[in-house]
Length: 128
Image (tube, rainbow, N blue to C red; front, side, top):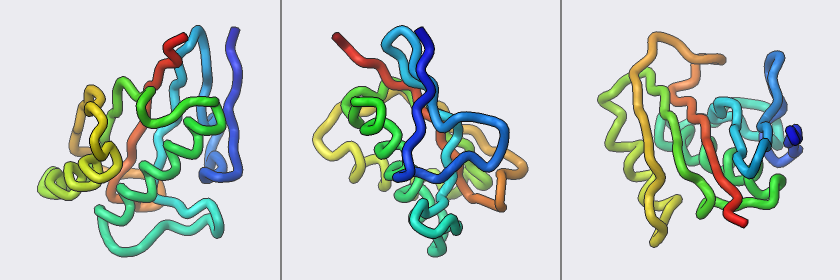
């Protein structure tokens, strides 16, 4: 059965999509950018600050679905500039502190919504 996941602790969709969909124990998030859900604005401070905000947004969606960051199995990272890869890695090290890292794909893109520097989507699994 498919269940739509939405939380006010992550940015509202800015298009025709849901924050996340849960099906057969898997959670698939839509791509998250560095929008602060408290005021709907893009965080300032560069790719590192945006990445931290994105990971917090993903975690809020996970929590709404009854999951947490331990359940993440795959992240796809879309970067405006692959030169920022080291900043992404630092954010991931802090976010997953002491946990095993999920699988990940990182690609450089030409443009992202709202001129974001990074967008990340997530696949998580509820191991029953």
